Image (cartoon, rainbow, N blue to C red; front, side, top):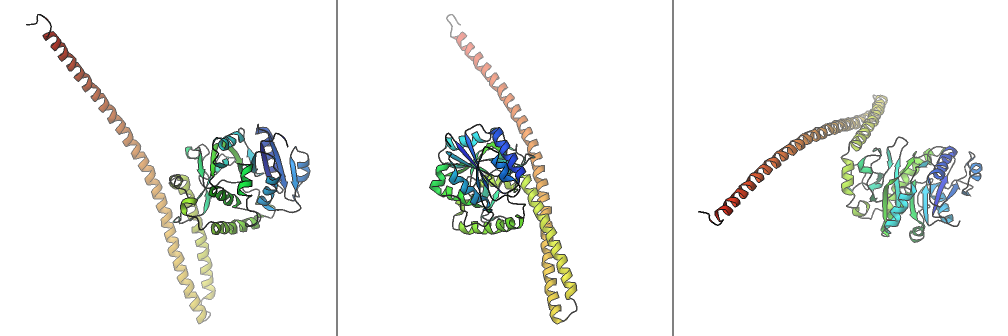
Length: 400
């Protein structure tokens, strides 16, 4: 297609209502020459007939090839100078595409640019993908969305940065880089997909390019609608677990500074100290507490069944009792962790209030010092001027 600047590739499997929203938003809010390539993964809800009525190019599969398999078909068929991968559960907003193109054009080392993805309520869904450090107790060398659930207007998420990876729910890259780097890996990772975007971004960075987050561009992402639903949930959850293992194994030999660049560490530290992160960690601890309590109940039931049956059962019951004690100890440790997190949050709030008061007092003291200095300088200047006048009078002709 002549004159196409951007090819927008959208894999779909059912969810016709989401596809309509997505295409309507593109038509309303995209001002550069573009084409839309829809790759239909054997939808059964009327998606095919609907797409035939729209001004889009359609590739129809006889079976569901998953997100990445379908996306790669669209990439091969694209004619634009740039290729934008987009989920059909994304609603693009006015001015979404131009900042991404500018990000790529102003720095030839930027290989992929992604927008701020927010929920319909304006909370961040994606603002860049980072890796936990090797000694992170929860996410050692694991990828995750930084600043997730932050308000979209928070200053921390409105800074343009290069991150280890971007999310393919909405991302744009020069077409030539797919020729240079190769297409995202659709064979290694399990159907229906997860982490192919992280893997491709790491390959991109190994070639010397940057993955850049561009908050001047913003889209609404409804989140995981493409994978979940239509009897795909169990497969998706399994793929999420297995593909993470595949990704970590594939890149396990890379040094930590590649997965977690030094420039990102201060950003990650800021995120870890945020109220949003602390509250999320507290929520996870409470969830673990609930799971531990359920497990304890199961152990108690097993104890009741095993009690008094025979010597072997008695031995098993004692083993369960020891396990129960260990779980109780873990439960108490977790409870103390939750309390400690609460105390730390209160201490940070109190410290912030105290520092604010000290800052105001310091400002007042500086003001007083500046006023006193000004008075002293004025007095000194007057003394110098008077002395000079006396000297001049004393040296005038006819002076006694």
